[in-house]
Amino acid sequence: MKQRYDALHAECKARGFNVQYIWNENLPDDPTLWQDYQATEQALQLNRQRIRERMPQKARFTQHRQE
Image: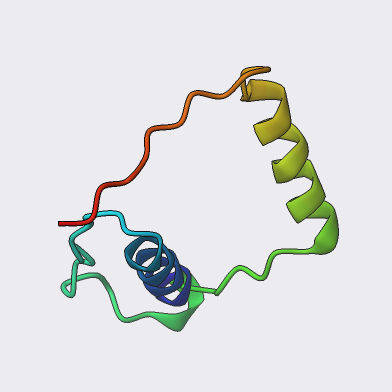
């Protein structure tokens, strides 16, 4: 789970989002509790389908300003 959190955090930073790293280092260190999830192609397709269903027909985008 931590690997996935790290990957999501890095992706958000790369996309220009202002995110903070808030992983709790005091979580139990039991490997059986943190079995890393590996997304299957079927799971990715399902997620993409759900995103398409929620997206408006004409998405509103705001230009990101660089200062």
